[in-house]
Amino acid sequence: MQVAITVNGVVHERDVDPRTLLVHFLREELDLTGTKIGCDTSQCGACTVQLDGKVLKSCTLLAVQADGAEVTTIEGLAENGEHHPMQTAFWENHGLQCGYCTPGMIMASAAFVRDNPGASEGEIRHYLEGNICRCTGYHNIVKAVKQVADAAAGA
Amino acid sequence: MWPNKFDYVRAGSVDEALASAAGGGKFLAGGHSLLPAMKLRLDSPEQLIDIGRIPELQGISANGGLTIGAGTTHDAIASSADVQAMCSALASACGQVGDQGVRNFGTLGGNIAHADPASDPPTVLVACGATINIQGADGKRSVGAEDFFIDLFETALDDGELITSVSLPNCSDCQCAYVKFPHPASRYAIVGVAVCLKMDGDTCAQADVAVGGATVKAVKCADAEAALAGTTLDEAALNAAAEAVKADIAEDLIGDIAYPESYRQQMAGVFLKRAIAAAQG
Image (cartoon, rainbow over all chains, first blue to last red; front, side):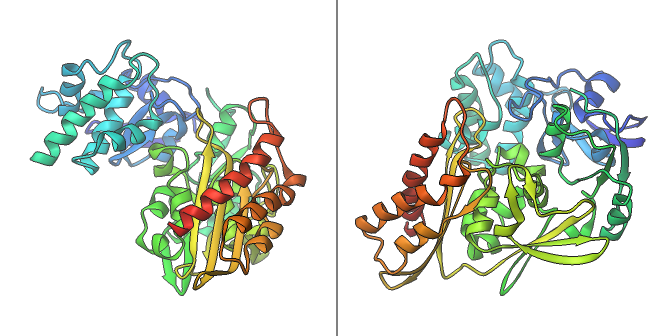
């Protein structure tokens, strides 16, 4: 089936097998391998992207369902060569170890802080229930998100 | 994981969807129950009829009661001021489904059509006396939530029938709540309890109670309701209800190696008390 999906501001028209998951479309059709496949069962959040601004687990949506939509992946978060504040905060707070969960963590956290500037540590921890990290123990991830949330509230 | 191959049809209206369903297959709304099942090869429909873009299945209207389009997402329900005012337990339950990514795309209609026993919204729909509105090739019909859920992943839906909306009475005068014991990893309900209490001063005039998670389907709990009605919800009444609810669900219990039937049965009583406390809070 023919689809036209805007990814990071660029329209991509492709003829896809209907069973192609969005994460396959991103990784295998577009070579955007920043988005990871982790559990592949909608639980771990490694495949998190934003679809029309909403956080989505891209292993749980068909590419045909995203036809006409705007998708943002980790590759599209920086603007004008400048890291998104959430990317900078993960760097500054060392919010990662192996890095596998990081693209999903950042995509989810960026949407969360956009919608919830000034979020508390508790709210951040609760929100991140959909993104699983097996290395860090979450502490530096939460510190990174809190830094951006605080900055967003002060702006 | 790739699902098995299927034909894909995108329906623009309910009539189009029903016409396509004559050729078999399954309806695809948000896909957040169906696609995981297909990836695990638990389901391999030959045709998917995408109903995710049908306008008439979207949205929430409040006219005396609530009518929620089957394609409305959990997030939209959880954050709706109308739902929070008229059935706060449903807003709470939808806000506890999965995580934010799941709630952004998973729909109420898809959720109840899937009828996962560990899901949250069905328990509230059964407690609050919801009606499931269905359309098929032979016309429309409505089924009470209690009769809609039949067994594990089994509902009253016939082949080719589509859930169009869910209706709920106005519970704004009630004290209602949904409380669950989430599985520590998956967050699915090990036990979920919904209560809807109609209070007359300090006395509970009527109590509606349903339990899910611990059971093959959401179960209405008449004995627990009888133990609460007419009381001031004092400690003796709560203890009696917590004991009665164990009998209410005895026939329908499910369990696994980590959380066996007997444990879930006991927890149903504990979480009934917590749900009542939350409703009164």
